[in-house]
Length: 416
Image (tube, rainbow, N blue to C red; front, side, top):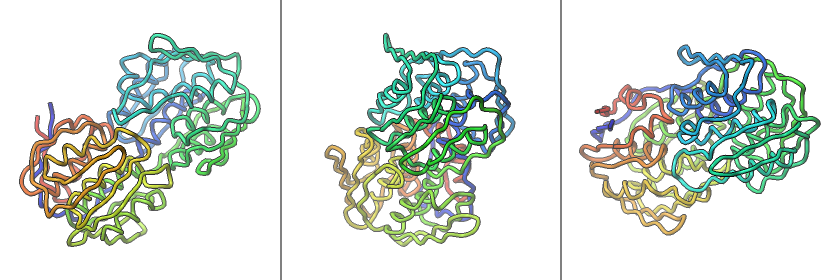
């Protein structure tokens, strides 16, 4: 099993370029099931999750070719509207094929999905929305089936602004008869990117990025050549790493407007942040300051940055309070940070972190993708050597993270 060996205490200097957004690429790849023409998707990161999604849409009948950071996807005359269970278990986002399959092919059969064990992410909002559009949904023996004679536009109110449900229902509605209006939708930049891609195919969607999205159904979606947005969580992770390890780094090719909540908290912790034409520059303070932080749906502070910020809090001067309001089981990294000397107390969804002067290197294991990133940051900050196991999680969301950190001066290597 692969693991990372980190010798902490090295300042990070230079510049680093952000890759395309994983959480934009995955729904856009699913949306290609709706297209009748060839689609080209550019700036696609080389990640395990992207590889699995490519396998999913291949298994459904699409032809997928990769050249560097570009994917070319061609439609097939025959679609197999059933996702293999072994692929679904590897990637929760594979449930995003339900909307496109139902919208264009009027049937799907999928097993319950897998993914990171960070808490309950029920699919009832997806299924209730599809049923409201005229789908017949049945569940038995670990599988979900959906069938319809034709989806109809309707008005749907989401009980919670779920990203996945918003994306699935947007895709299903693009070919539905009439107009569909989604209320209380997720507002993430990745939702806007999906809208822009679907419109590039010939869709008629407006409102993404706000809490109401209007989709006017069309008869056909064709092909498109599209470039996905930068990965805001990857950018935030790099910025957090520099803030914690110390240094002066320019994070290139990212969109500051997608990171406002993260930038505000890093500034509050004492980092000096400068917005430049080609990216975001962060200069670290002598010591970070404690803050209070609560995760919220976008544009609030992202849950996908919570573990990384907890790592920073462990060495911040004073007492920090961190509230996780999105997932009920996303503090597993706290126990691993304690192994490095962190003073963290957890009660329910609240973590109280008393900053210590320094962490000490040790052996830790990641439980999920963002926990892995947090442990890497902790290792960069710690005195001595840190071993991070479970780096397979890291590869789901960061392309060659250790190689890119090495270029900034980090002493980090992958061992097998």
